[in-house]
Amino acid sequence: MDALDILTDLENVIPYFQPIFSADEQRVIAYEVLGRYRSDGNIISLGPFFHDDQIPDEYKYEVDQLLVKKALERALELEDDVSIFLNRDADLLMYRHGEPFLHELMAFEKKGLNLKRIVLEISEGNYEGDIDQLDHLLQYYRTYGIRLAIASIDSESNFIERIGQLSPDIIKINLQALKSNATSTNFTDVLFTLSLLARKIGATLLFENIEMSYQLQYAWKNGGRYYQGFYLQPPVPMFVERDALKGRLKGKFHEFIAYEKRKLEAIYSTAEFFQNKVQDIVIRNKKVNYEELFASLVKELDQIAFRMYVCDEDGFQKSANYFKGESGWSTQIEYIQKNWSWRPYFLENIIKMRNERKGILSDLYSDIETGDTIRTFSYPLNGNDYLFIDITYQYLFENEQLL
Figure (cartoon, rainbow, N blue to C red):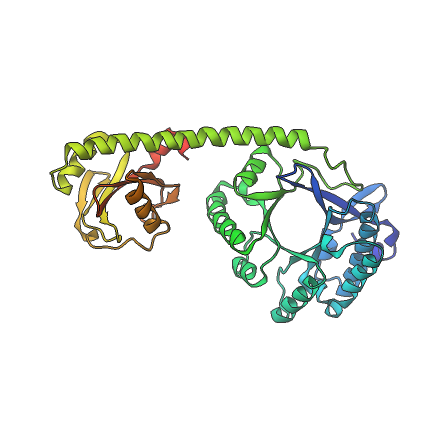
């Protein structure tokens, strides 16, 4: 696709619109504007045009402004609560200090378009300009009510740092990484961090590139409020009926809810199993030392646990580790007096166990030493000491609803 062909045929530069659906309303709440070029009856994406470093910024800007203008003319016919997402490369955004772009938006404001409906999706890519000037411009736009979205999980190492600096209204997460088994585990870990960060700064998670049902379920489960992708609706040249997928999404959500309920019931039942089993063993071995207690626990939990130890309420380890390796169970005395209070939720769980006088089954996490995905059952032995039993991945795998 030659750039000059496009620049001399701007009439065939047209906007396409990809709907964005909400979890709470199960309807279209926004459209992302995508550039297309009509050539000999074919519709061609303008993505390569905008990503070509050989094409001057002024050419890209001319085409982009035309797309924005055509898209916003169409957006005037939408209901007032439907937002418009406009993609903007950081270099292109800084063209002429961003003033012409803002003037174009303000011209549409005079036509009745509330600028609070505009979501500026910024892609910094390989931006090498002054980052402070860029941030200043973005904050200036926000004074007009324009919202900011930042995309997405990729190879950029400073992504989370930029979220902290910009405090975007929307964090857009690309689900392409879920297609690879090699990256999906790390992706999930990073996403968990992002979901916590989004909650702290009051941002909304939008999941894009949803192409299969399991990706929609993943987005729903991981706190996604907004969804976008070919599985729901591909980009189209016209606006769609807002409630077109309401019945389908409701049905999917019922499936997801039923699955999560079964999973939560399984987790609850497992916690009860460990509570009754461990409580019975502890009561029967109330007067023995920790080594003897571990030996009694192993008789009943040999195929379930791989590590046991006791800590006081401040997280200092009072026993050695009782650890199951390839050659069987062994004692690791070097762990005595190590402190684990720095671990997330450690002190919170101690207080909870002390007050409720019952054990807790942890969520899934990666073990620091083995790297395996595990859960830990914690149990209050007395007023000061707490037993921790690490459960093997194999047991979780055999009881798949625990994963």
